Image (tube, rainbow, N blue to C red; front, top):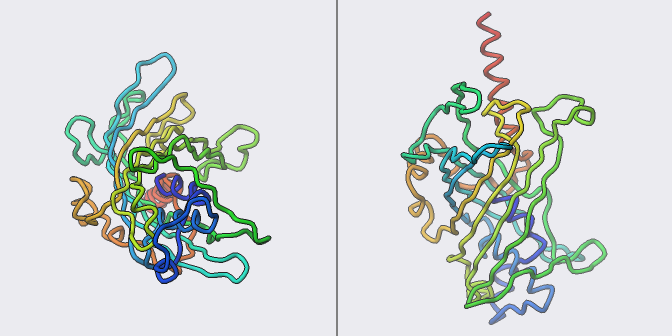
Length: 304
């Protein structure tokens, strides 16, 4: 989610090593090398391995043809990341981010954590499986130049009122759903979604090569098929996420409740990013739910 949007903008802006940047007084976004430095800065800390934390909160709606949209949940989420830095003789500076993320689906009235949800369309009480994706990382490093030596970055921010603003980008996702069978090309079963992201970053923080970004605000949204734990089968409709958040200047102390307490109690591993040398495949809601379903089925089979 947030990670996908940040990664989808990886080719847009970026940053250099702190030592190399210290000789500069201001990044020049007309130069490809400085565009890359701004991009890495937007994604990472100036210091390799230093955690960067983002959080967001908002609402989830359900939409079906011919019906009024339903407010299904409130949500609170976070993403913690750090970056490993590279320096290639031909491709120049590079980086790879590794992250973990949690998003809670909360009662729409009380904003409290709830273990189950009564599906209004099926009447079934289902277990809520919140987002707990570890890892959500870049599969490969991104470099200042491609293998042929051409610059990789384009600056897509607009300056207004002392901020660099981005908007309109979308991660258009379409791939084989890990919970589907072996015949997607015949009967469907692909994961189909679109994620949206916007940013507002102070110009002075973005262009200062010696300062980390601390005051960035963001918005994240997604339109996708029903979440697998909702057990909606092939019923028509989509879920719509709409959230706003920011980069946490004060770290975990800045997170809202109940997210802050839930992390400490039930998701302690998410209080730090994964190791810089982590090479595990990425997790998604669908892979996590598949593992949960497979585990439950195996336990039930043992009882028989």
